[in-house]
Image (cartoon, rainbow, N blue to C red):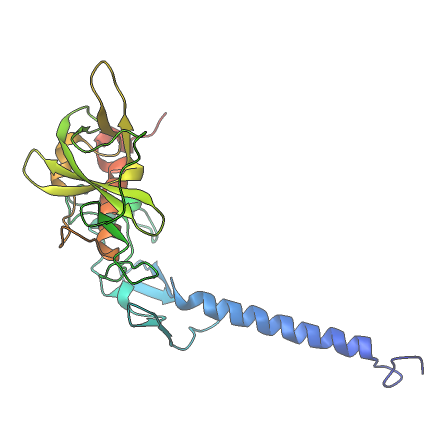
Amino acid sequence: MGTGAITGYVDVAQLVLYLFWIFFAGLVIYLTLEGKREGFPVETDRRDGSVRRETGLLPMPDVKVYKTKFHGDFAAPHERDFEDPRPPGAAIGPFPGMPLEPTGDPMKAGGIGIGPGAYTRRADVTDKTWEGEDKIVPLRVAHGFEMAKQDLDPRGLTVFGADNQACGTVTEVWVDRSEHLIRYLEIKTHGGRQVLLPMNFSRVRRDRIRGNRVTVESILGGQFEGVPAIASSEKITLLEEEKVMAYYGAGTLFAEAQRREPLF
């Protein structure tokens, strides 16, 4: 027998190859199971109106508890996504899996949840910095933060919706203590509400003719009154962030009826 041979039909290289196949198969199975801790089981609609939960080829993994530094224990997989009511919409056709058409006003605070207005049910607690402080806060409580002198300070500027209708005035800037970024603009609407405008949905403009302003393309001026409220004036929870962002996201499709029409 040659070098490395165990018998006349089996050698060391062959055993190593078999071990690699076993290891690789185990790795694929492990990663597949771990990937099902979020987003599974998948829901599929049936013709009779029922909903079936599909786990795929492999079953759901056992529940694993993750211990976090600030937010307690987190179990995965979980049932939180199945506790929320179904989105307020009806299928546009008789076949399973058809898109949902909103049954009410999708731009009302309670009507988001469909299409670009969909959101996930995150924990109703604030995100934290490494030191344990609230991560996203207004400048009035973010000690050591200030607007850069070379930038246009949005506080005091009028906010205009996609229809060029003024909706309110910026009263404060909310910053991310960890990333050192502006996350939200706090607006006092003409109706007297204090609402948040995500910075990535707004544009602060220098305009020598019409005056400096903040413009928003996702929603109309009158729709700022429907922005979901937050419980505290000095912090925002992860769930509240989801709902606020979802409202402006819904506006990209639902703010005006013509936005839902085809281009051709």
